Length: 196
Image 1 (cartoon, rainbow, N blue to C red):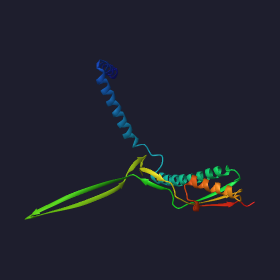
Image 2 (image 1 turned 90 degrees about the vertical axis):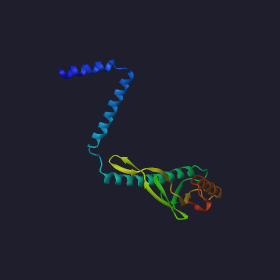
Image 3 (image 1 turned 180 degrees about the vertical axis):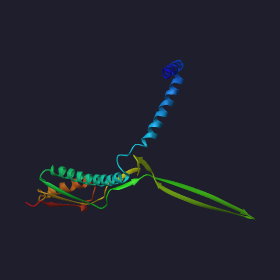
Image 4 (image 1 turned 180 degrees about the horizontal axis):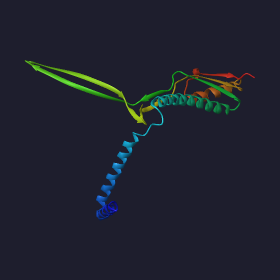
């Protein structure tokens, strides 16, 4: 009963407060609740170990690059097969480089000036110290590099095999389409007739 009566007293006191103080106390209670949740969440076991999540991230990165390359190939085949007279089309794309991931880097540059004024000459020396570090973010119980951008792989060449490639007009249309879609020069595109 004593706890109930103290709770009623607190509720009565709360009702008598002005709206600014009520907001202040609610904000304090929310902040304390968030701090407690964060504190106690560190005691909950993680779903995956760091080794598992690192391996998973590597597989995801490799599969996303493979998925990207496969999607480009399929889209190119689909588009080229719609060109008048092209017929069935198969495409092979080779890449000069693989996908490049650019992490965020923080650079700390410190400059120290030292001056020595002995006798009649003034000597000043300057020392620079620069340190760079990859920015990391917390992902569950692991730290991962913060990725700024991912540069797409550079295309080395494209081979197109099409049923209608024996017609010079179709061949030129296929070549121009590949150049436009892939952003490559004409000498990097080869068009061949599909065997029957």
